[in-house]
Length: 250
Length: 315
Image (tube, rainbow over all chains, first blue to last red):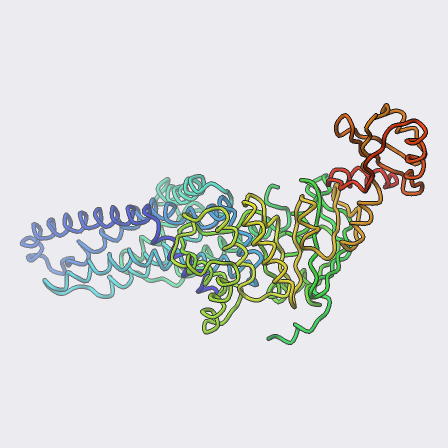
């Protein structure tokens, strides 16, 4: 049942021109970043060769590529996910799901997994770019895997946040702005004071990714993502339950 | 077929109430529906029809009261109970970017139909709703009438015991209305159908029973025959060649209110206890009014309401 719903969301994303346009732009920008980094690596290579324990292609090309992808996808995920619930409200299709023999949790999980499946495409594309370096030399597979995992978790968290934002309104654009607002606030939390280890750091979603980005997979970071995802999914379920209890502003 | 299909009472709602803030949209409604029955919920806009249907289909939680669908409590076991419900909301819930086939397959899967039965159910629902040639069309490109049919197909594809249709014929042309009414009559075989409308003839043509809602309360609940008797018994239509003053008609014993249709025709709303027919005929002969037509008036919904709300003691 959850997969049926996830499939429906995935199909919905692929049938919207907006998602295709954003995905194409994304790919264009990331390819550009990839080539720039590769170019600078080739320029640096003679000097690197003289260093002992020099950073390899993976550190110079792949890691910054994933960083760039994380930032760009923070902007793009709200656009991909804004319609998830807001559009169902606007088109008044929610009763189809609400009157079907499925629980609110299944509805929310289905929508979340549908968006996640879609977001795994850019993760795959970026990882493929990183892996393509293997054609010209040795690559650090561990670093690549840590980055791919980090990006996947980051995007899943973004997806949960955007799904929640989408459940708050019946206007997809407002959902996108809200989602972006939450994500930017969380990003700024770490920028505000990069050295402190206070509450702001705890709220920062990108701070986790920075560690994955250096190849460090810490169980605390895995747990952080899991908690963030569950929290926002629960908030979404609560919000939809409220629709049923309070009425759709009718 | 599930075993539950032998249950005779399909819908049973007790003391159903729903408040939106301080506003009570539905107050203490009781509903019972047996297999093979079509129940019409009749009422003006804002009477609580849609709210009642939303509660019966589990899309809106009742403020008070209980609902059982095929003996399963909808509030405590929503998933099991909803398996037996097909619902067409006021606005058909269609994903415009899907084709008819894709959408109906999705609806069938969402309603828990196993994958291998979907194709058969799809063909069956499409044949019933006259959609056999439109499978590959996008929902967004269909006319209103066809969208409504897809909405109904979506509600019956999983062969539910209870079909709830919220104003199924609104916005359709007369031929489409006729088709949909025929479909509803066909659906009642081994099912229960609840439909809402504000059109009196619609109820008369397809329903077995009617509940009239007014300001969130049931003000009339009877079979169609009962509605008909009520309807006919409470208003007379009379035509005179030399029409008297309206006041003269109103003065007759048993006449509560007189409405002039045109110069010669009048509708007399009568007191249920006193039949003014004899008095009217006698008076007409005496005064030379030239009565040439007298019969039960086919009242409009508004008249029924006026009567019903007149009768209601102040609650």
